[in-house]
Image 1 (cartoon, rainbow, N blue to C red):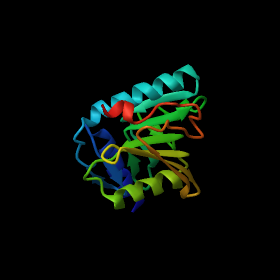
Image 2: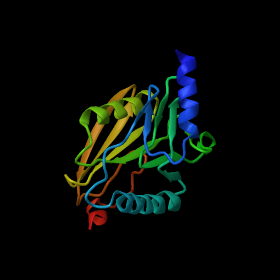
Image 3: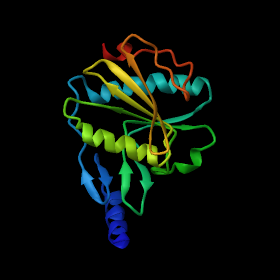
Image 4: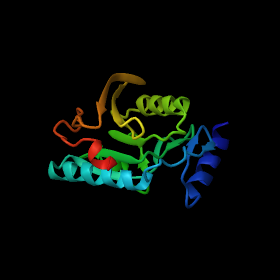
Length: 180
């Protein structure tokens, strides 16, 4: 069983280009793009977060990098933005090998809640500390503090409330700034 999954994982990692996740050896295409350009919104969020993280020397951000949570089980996810705190960059090469500190994902009208719940559970189970869920259609951001395979705290921010989290406590930007 495990040998078969390793072969699938190796084949998956060799594919280029690739815009899908690998879950227990099965490829899964992410939901369709948003009405507002997905790439443009990710770029705006990345620019703002990167300016904050860089100015505070907190760590580093990546856009669209794969995260290998469990190679043996075939759990490889690709969130929109990934953050790793300063001092943990050694887990990054061509992809992230292990849990980053924070991931950010945008939803679309086609995002399935079941898949979303699965992703949050995997990120939590494997040690990701924060999951930022940006929901442009609802004009809100849910910041989930993760622990022990579940959600420890969920904070919902509307489009005019500055986003704050334990990892980024002084980040003072609002979702509404990027939706225009």
